[in-house]
Figure 1 (cartoon, helix red, strand yellow):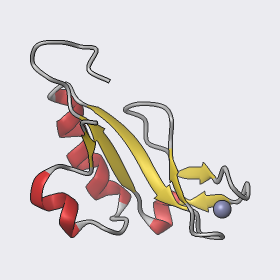
Figure 2 (cartoon, rainbow, N blue to C red; figure 1 turned 120 degrees about the vertical axis):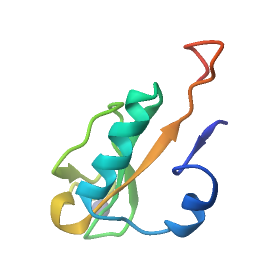
Figure 3 (spheres, helix red, strand yellow; figure 1 turned 90 degrees about the horizontal axis):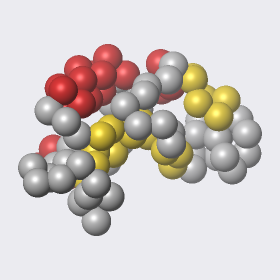
Length: 93
Ligand SMILES: [Zn+2]
């Protein structure tokens, strides 16, 4: 597995969601560097952790797969998962 939250020390400091704008700033940089980013958020109803299955895509709202509740990600904040791309190939997942 090569996926991790932001990598290194940042992952340890980010157990919770951060503001969407902060996420976008960091994610945008990672995407430009060639990595894949998947948005994550926490359902505001059942607290289950959700991952958006569209790479490099961030939503303002997200539907929970557990309870179908729509979470206002813009208000609640979000996190993301990074699939690090190795230099020697595009199919590392
Ligand atoms: Zn839920």
